[in-house]
Image (tube, rainbow over all chains, first blue to last red):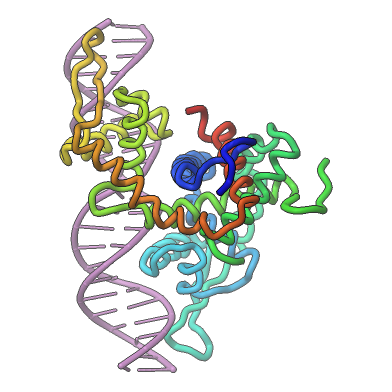
Length: 150
Length: 150
DNA sequence: TATTGTTATACTCTATAACTATA
DNA sequence: TATAGTTATAGAGTATAACAATA
């Protein structure tokens, strides 16, 4: 049993409810501030993964992003239409598809890092070093607990 | 400038990017685990607010939830159809509408606290007290920085 | 004229079920 | 038979623009 006193110390039930609300609303706020005319937040997330990890498959991307396969099919279709990713046949396994960034896609990701996260970096810039450290630790905890490795 | 060494210590750019991804994906995971046959995550969030704060108006709810007014109109329409909230005329200001929980709505919120957050409480139950404290602090920081008060 | 709320319109996001092709 | 991916279908989530009613 944890004591109720101290900074940020709450019961599990309350923490769960607060976390649910903060994640729900924060993601709304983030979406509206990180979507651009070019690509949505979800689409950009896929591009950023590909930029970091190289080529992948629709199934692996769906699993990584925690969306169902048909959703990833649609995201990739939009990105392909926009000329940001290319789908090619897998050399050994004819069922699989390899997805990779085009040059245009690479450029968009790199540009995005500067512009897209500007709003969020501004907000993060307003808090203390100590608070940034806490956020960084929380990110790691959430990744292990909810999002999964990588 | 903060040093890169130590637990969870990262540059602002990296923290912003990681936070963006974790919030996006966590909210997806949460939505899928907290939606029920009865109401979606967004709908439940409105019900929970009303249960805690009593009656409100569509405009105030839209602001609190960080959605546009038409979105709140739709959420309230669904909740009203389901018999979970009631809309009544404002006694003084004819433009405004007062929204309040019905008895059915109240019951659903209370039941929801037990059942709806079960999955998340299970995940939170697996981490250490220290990690829970960090999450609690992060919730407070995100609330101040992104979500706003209350 | 300004505010509150709704309607109209048009996307994206999301899931489940059914289908196709390959292994 | 199992797996990878797509298509079909349906609904939730979201925003901007236009509108109506009231202050």
